[in-house]
Length: 106
Image (tube, rainbow, N blue to C red):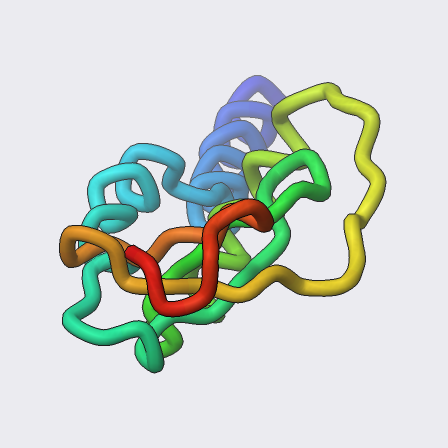
């Protein structure tokens, strides 16, 4: 019977590690996900607490998955803000355009 418990224990560990999100990997990739050379490359996504952040549209899915996993770990009042803000590529990094920034000014 002891052998059965040990086998079940290792199977559970193997299964849980397969589905666990790798926060460190997401954190390491964040710089790549927000890199840009032009404004058109950037899109807004909700951050972990319902605010906004910007990522390169090539990595929108990965950025959203990372933010969703952070939301599960961070306890905050989650309220999705609308409408989506404009984004821009500022110093080769996708950014949410501040509402008080004049058009045409970077």
